[in-house]
Length: 390
Image (cartoon, rainbow, N blue to C red; front, side):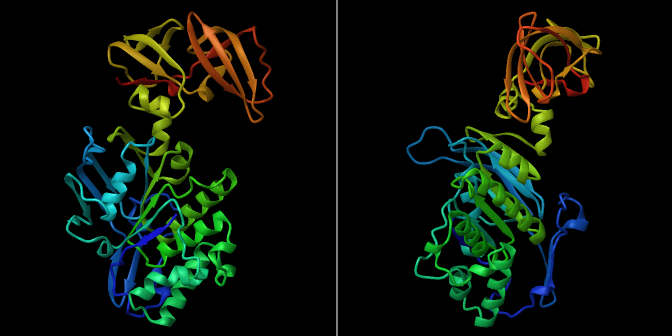
């Protein structure tokens, strides 16, 4: 997870007091509310974490017929953490490199606080980019690695020491300042790479699959750290990942890309509860799809006449409901089904149901009494049913 530290929006040579930085309260998850906007005062000037806009952004690599990125338009609020999510080759890293200035788009624009930065070199954009691999200098200790970029900008020795100390504390590595990179674990090296980006106090923090090389326990630990650092520092952050869980845990909003095109841009919960297409629903683990015909405010299906919490367009529709939302027992939208499969997974039991030619999946608590082959009554809560688009 190497860091490309691009120049901050203030004079690095000027001394300043880190106490002058106002941090957004820990746990704040509403970047659109002005009370949570990150701001800082430097020598009488006020700096606000940057707003970012990608405007009709497209990019095509030479020798490739299809574009890597096609007409991507996304707005990121100041202080917000947005995840670019998608499988390998979907264009998410291409978009991140364009934001950083490492790649020039074929068409479109990148605006920071309303101003185009396409003509601005990477080191002048006030951004810091953290890559997947740490690529720390092996001949330097941790403190020297973190402060290297500041030294190249002729920041005073005392100022470097203070800012390195602050960065180390942010990533909980203050006891490792004198160690060489070869003496650190993979997770510790990732923390140092993150600190190296944070020490420049960037207005934009760009993270490219920073946790993908870590094992499961370290990934969870680093997720918590990244979110904590981002919230406390108020950095406008774009985080690239292929991991749905990672995006949901970290992001205020998710931009989902398939084949270089933006499919949906919304809060994490919406991807589970209100996906706009079957493809998106499948990407987020939906497996229950029920075909029917909407009329008179209900949907006629092989499971019976189902009511919805909202209106459905008249005609043929496809409904979806997540396995954990399906309930056992009678009531509205209930039907009889045969249990075709029971799999105990420790924290839950996954069951297969079949009713009138419709196969459904059901997730219940591990203490539920469900046996393969028996007939049960299941119901689909109206508020959990969602009509999919094409």
